[in-house]
Image 1 (cartoon, helix red, strand yellow):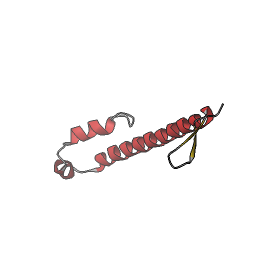
Image 2 (tube, helix red, strand yellow):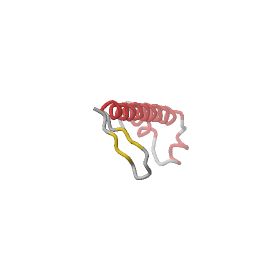
Image 3 (spheres, rainbow, N blue to C red):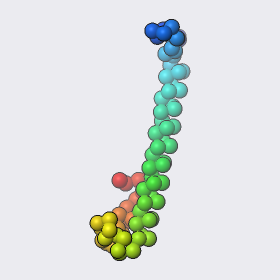
Image 4 (cartoon, rainbow, N blue to C red):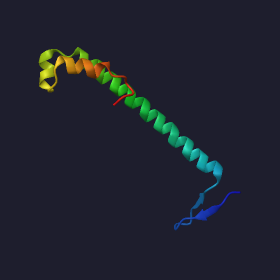
Length: 78
């Protein structure tokens, strides 16, 4: 059963279960895309750390061993 309600401006809004499912599914898809982007970003940053020389690492305040530890972490771990 679909329920209709009207906003103050007269526009109708649907609150059917099918519509709510679509919103929830859309939110899940967006969350999956955001998580995938974040994982890709972490992986790229950690690989880049390994390519920096010792002088560049000192400029950002870390040493070689710390950079190697960070790069060895799995991409899904913050």
